[in-house]
Amino acid sequence: MMEKFGLREGINEVIGITTGEWINTAPLGIIVKDGIKVRLYSNHTRELLEKSGELFVNVIHDPVVFVISAFTDLDESWFERLNPPVIRNALSWMMFEAKIEGSFAHLRFQNGEVLRKDIGAVNRGFNAVIEATVHGTRYVMNRSPQLKERILYYGRIVERCGGKREKDAFDLLLDFTGIV
Ligand SMILES: Cc1cc2nc3c(=O)[nH]c(=O)nc-3n(C[C@H](O)[C@H](O)[C@H](O)COP(=O)(O)O)c2cc1C
Image (cartoon, rainbow, N blue to C red; front, side, top):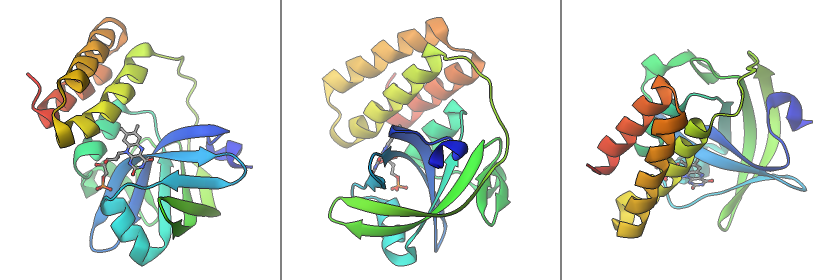
């Protein structure tokens, strides 16, 4: 049922949007397997979800959107609609009712819409940006030299396989993490 909106079995990397005092954006891994849930670390997404009980999700293939929302929030100029929140070029949006239990939020689908379809082939540069961003969000917390090495390893794949958008995204990642 969620396949129509772009979510399939496994972990789906999407942009989670929570609203309240501000519009908060963060990459999240939506886990589809006998139900739908997301693991939530202690972050703004969790804080806002505890109050609103509503999680918006955008499926999108823009690497720059992943990097910016991992380290800060996308401002309103990134959105094509605010109610429901839709980031420019998102493929679909969904809204879930969220119930937090321990380290997970259990999600119940409420509403959603498919906005456009994308026939892009797999690009290793894009995948490498996502991997580097996962490690980047950890690196800013502990500055581990091993994580820095991994990020630079993915950077070489971005350089070899990515297009301009992937390279711009990786440059932003280096700025946000302070890696030179
Ligand atoms: C691809 C990707 C997937 C992520 N998945 C999750 C996740 O499932 N749960 C989570 O709490 N953080 C996840 N993160 C980390 C958050 O996006 C990151 O910590 C972010 O800064 C949290 O922002 P917030 O404080 O605005 O909520 C992920 C990061 C990336 C790059």
